[in-house]
Image (cartoon, rainbow, N blue to C red; front, side, top):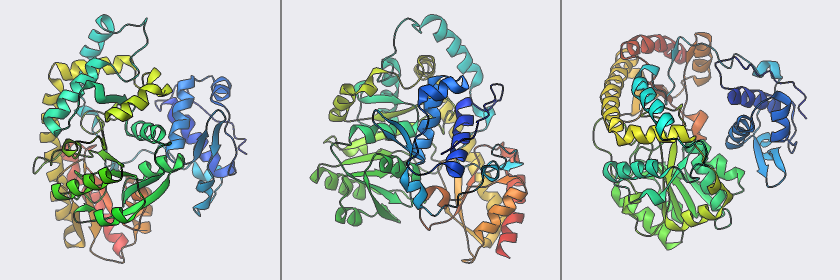
Length: 463
């Protein structure tokens, strides 16, 4: 069992829950055994003079990534399946390899540049709601403040064709929180969970941690393979139909209707993650799958991470009435998942029209960045690669033309040259591999130089 004393720097710019999460993860990999119990949240908070919320956030991240499991009324335990993956257990000093290293270029595929955030407007609205609208003497609404839920519902109805009202919206602490909430609420109704493969690894890790049997379903040029799903035992399916993660394909309306019909026929549930729908650069995205459903078979998930800020940690789940009833009967409904001041500031931001103005500005700006990235990839990588996904979100997906391309060499070279790159396989859990060329975190004028520097590593990895 772990015996390392964790160093938590109260003066660091790195949030304390991230510091604790990193330290715990390193300790679990290096020292813990399967089934070992983590210290209780209360004990950890007392030992390191941290708030319970800080410790809970760190434990929740470990849980979401599949390192630990939560046992009711018992605590958190190192999960058995983590040690069945063939992962080499290494010395903790090796694991502490510059976790917050400064990179010359960072191609993170879900990042915005700090200058893109409307800080002046946000600060003004924050001060306004803090002074006049936040009631510090009352508990916030556990489902989320009505004013924010109503603004989100109005936006989704207009922009994404979602059939919803304020009553059907639950405010969450981002995507992972929403997925975990759904998994928890439906545990005594369903047992088999399906996901697109390749697909976003966090979703199936969360459901696996709650004891669901995982059913991977393949993807083709039209998205999820409906016939394969029909042959499975899956009762819940998680999909990204507007811009499939990571391949970028869009599920056509005909397949969406087939999917809905199948899940209705078995009394199942679709979890629709409307991934990248707000940042489409060529065409308007197909309206939401949820808007086609009339039987309460779809949960619709979204966040403000890619178009506004990942730092504010606000997401939402639009749920059918029967799931909302389960939520209201659960202990999760008693406490707000996002701070009241953040909710009220975002509500004012949307109510005063700043959200739609900001979204238009971000589409224009990120389209320019998208096009600059595409042009630079073509300019510097040429025929050595294919761009297989583009036109939405904050990254391009690039694969080498050479089937013997050395991915490990590329990764090592990038680390040696302080260039942060991100490979699809790391997050999608299959043999599918590609490099995700994120552009959102760059200034427009930086993109050409960044891709030029990356190209030198790329060609070395081909040799």
